[in-house]
Length: 171
Image: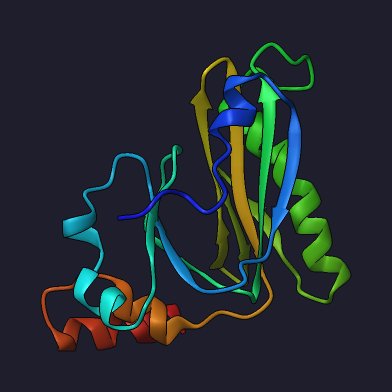
């Protein structure tokens, strides 16, 4: 497993508040801080298809990222007064701009507590927050298109029948 392509730890550890926007030049898989990569990701498939696997310093699940997504990272100092006191208020405040972007491009997105964006009861974006040094890092993505076939393939599942169910659910 390689290092993270967008390593925010230096910014966060230095207390550098920032907004980082990234559209990956090539696909990769990113797993959450607490995940066991051997249980979550089909490493053989990723290796055979030159899809690198990275671990991020915030939680959440395994995700497939490519150029059809705009990934955002927001780094705050933990004592920044714009940060709401509760987790629910934090997500509601900082996911509303993402919802607004989706709506501006014609997608009727809504915020769903605690940290999802949905359209007609279907999740279209997840987010996560983590603490690095004296900073809070908020991550998420704006999905313009999604390769659900590859996402279903990179996940480690019990068998191909289950993988087919995962792919249909993602679609």
